[in-house]
Amino acid sequence: MTPLQRLARRFWSPAFGAILFIMVAVVVASCSSADNGGEARAENGSSLSSTDNPDTTVRSTTTTTATASSEAATSTTSSPSTTATERPACSLADGVNTRTHSDQERTVWFHPAISAEPAPVLVLFHGFAGIADEFAANTGLTVEAPAAGVSLVVPVGLGTPPTWEIGNGPFDDNGFIANLIDELAGDPCVDAERIWLAGYSAGAGFVGIQACAIGDQLAGVVMNAAAAPALCTEPTGFDMIFAHGTKDRVVDYGGLAIGGDTLSGTPALAAGWAERLDCNGPTYQVSRPAADPEADDAIALEDVAELPDFRNEADRTTIRERWTDCRGQSGTVDMLSYVGGGHRWPGRDRVGGEGLIPTTPDLTCVILAAMNEASDALADC
Image (cartoon, rainbow, N blue to C red):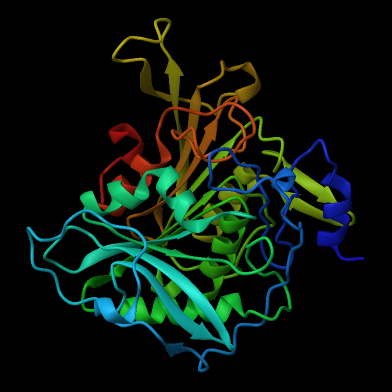
């Protein structure tokens, strides 16, 4: 029996309401429950199954079935108006696009930046049983990314319910995403030096796999609510942001032991990346709630000399560990621990359905600030 199967047997029950989807071969992430879209609950009638991840060598079978013209891709959503500026023609059409890969039709949502210049791109991955466009909307990124000058790309997982493959499977998700990144890197409306990946739960684990497979094409990676073994023997020097609630009951903040496999918690994962990237640090900052929750300065960021024990901190405190100058460059690794937080997207109440919703810093804001090269994204959010 595989570790994934053991995990499913361990965590699935009618009361639990979601199956924990763990990426074991290289990286792991989980399923999640959902309210109001974003992640589908088992009680809604989904067939809870998962697929395995293929090898990544099949990259020549992708054919394009959507072009930049509106006739080539049918849009079922709208992005902020771009009429105020003239931007280069994009290979992806505004809205929903299709691509064919390994004899499967794949769907990709695209929300272009409001910019006349080639723009940075964020590729966002939903979690287990996630509804991609709803998940993206619930993070706020479908509106806030274009307004911040960032194009948003949202691929859709396959399967019933939809997810991302682990091991050997029929869909070749790795090859599909590798081709998509190649397409974006050659797109005249994309700043190829500023391509980021972000994921939630199972999507975060899949992002970890891509960080190893195509890291030389990435400027940054964001993993929210994931657990994994240490990644990549020789990672490249892109920025990394890890985020996790300390009371996540779906994917444990401290890691998991599944059969004979030990899956590191997010803090250990972040520290492992920083060590392999030869970063300096860490330094520590804490945001603690003010006594008056209505005060304008309800969260204040302060430097501390030692890493606080989150078990002694009040809920809604955020602890950041930061490593800098990775690989002798300006790259950073950030670990955001949201004290008391559940299996959530910090700052947004419509993603995930388990546990306390961390409020500050808003992860969507942190991502966009980092992509726009803010000196300190946490301080800005």
